[in-house]
Image (cartoon, rainbow, N blue to C red):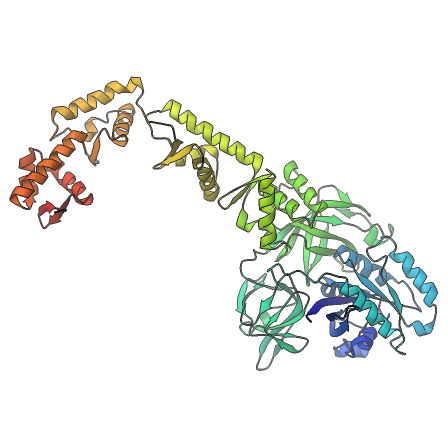
Length: 635
C-alpha cells in the first residue's frame, strides 16, 4: 500500500507545550539549539516525523514543523507554516486562549490553511471543559470551526493516542499535495557537512525532485545539481510534494544560499521585485491595537513569503486598508523573490512586532497601470474572486497581458499544471472567449478586431495600387502597430488560412490579380516599345526609371513576367530572352563550349548584356561555366 505524505505545523502561544507535544507524539525533541535548551522555549524551527495509520488502514507519513510561540520569534513561525497541510494548535488548559494563539490563528488564515486539530495541552491541570468552550468560541467563523479538540498531557501521556487518531483521521480526509511538475523547495535551513558539502532543507511543494537533477537556486539564479536526497535521514531517489526534504548541493558554497531561497527547476519563470495582490486585514483585530489600525497607502512593511522575509512598500488602489476589508495592492519589494500566482503571504510592521495583514499573489509581473487601467483592474478582481479556477486564471492572464499572450508561457508561474492550462485554453477557445493561433492565445474580440484591421489595410492597398502583388508585410505590421514578431506571424497565418495568401514579401487576397491601372498603361507600352526597338542591346534600365510612377510600372512588369530582370541594370522582353537562349543553345550544340565574346557576336549584343545574362543562365542550370567558356548544362 502506498504512503501518503503530509506536513503538520504546530501553532500556539509560548509555553503552551508545543515542543513537548511533538516529543510525546514522535519521541523526537524538536528543540535542537543550546539556547532553546537553556531558555526552555523554542526559538527556531524544529522538525520531527510521525507515522500514522488512517482509519481505512492507509499509511500516513507526516513531517512535523515545530514553530516558536514567543512574540519575538513570529518571523520564524511564519517561515515554518507556509506549506503545511494541517495545523496542530497547542492551547494549554491553565492559560487558555492567549495573544500568540490569536496571532498564529490569523497568520494561518492569511496563509490559506484550512485544516487543524486542537490539542488542549496540560489537561492534568484542570479547566478542560471551560477552555474547550473558550476555544470553540474563538474558532467560530474561522476555517477551523469544526476542528476536533483533544485533551492531552505530555507529562502523563493522557490523550496522546487519541491525538494520534485525530491527526490520522483529519489527514486521511485531506487530498495529498498536488504534483503539477513545478517543484519549489523554500529553504528553511542551510548548513555544510564535512566531506558532503552544502545541505539545504525545506518542505517540497508543487512537484518532484530527483537525485542527479539540475536545479536553480533563486533569487540568485544559481545553477547546480542535486547529489543526494534525504527525508528524515533516509536516502531517497526522489522526493515528492508534501515531504520534508534535505538536498545535498555540492556545487554551492554555504555562503551562496540561505533561508528564504527557493530551489526549483529551470524554465519556471523568473523572480520579481513587484507583486500585485489582494491584501486583507482581519476583522478579528482590535481596532485600538497597533495591528488593528488602518494600513495606509505607501506604508513600509515586511512581506513574509515562503521562508523569506523581504522589506516592501505597499501601494493600494484606495487610500487605506481597514479591518475586515480586502483591496488590490501593489508591493514594491526591496529584493526579488520567486512567487507564483495564488501564493499566500503575511505582512508585518517594520518593527516586526505586529502582524498587520495578509494576502494572495494575483500577478507576478510589474503592472504599473493596475489602478488606472479598468480592464486590468477588472481582470485582477475576477481572479481574486476565483483563485482556484484555472479557466478564470487563463482568461485573466490574457487580459493582463493586453489581450494577447504566448500560450506556452501563460501561467508558467502559477499553481496549475501544464495540462490543466492547456485544457483551459481549449475550453476558452470553444466558448469563443479566446482565439488560439500558432503559439498565440488572444482575447477573441481583440483578435477579430486585429484581423478586420489587417483585411481593411490589404483591401485598401489593392484599391490604391492594384499593380502590386499585395501589401508589404513590413508596412502592414507597422500600420497595425504590432511589436511582437510572433503575434504578427500568427495574424498572417490566420489570414492565410482563409481568403488571403502570401505573395513573396507581401500578403494579398487570394482573388487579387495585379493589374496596371489605365493611367499607367501608356508608360508600360512605352517601356515595351523601347525594348522592342533594340531587343538584343536594350537601353540601360535607369532610362526607364525616370520617376516613381515609372519605377512602379517597371516593377509591375517584372513581377508579372512581362519583363525579365537580367541584372539591376538590364531588363529584356520575355520573347527576346527565349530567343537568345535558343541561339546560345544552337551555337554551343554545333561548335562546342563558347566564350562570352563568341556568344555576344552570335546574338549581336554587348558585354553589358551578355555577361549578366550568361550568369543568370548559369544560376538557372541552363549553362555551365568552364574557365572562360560556357557549355550546355544538360545533355
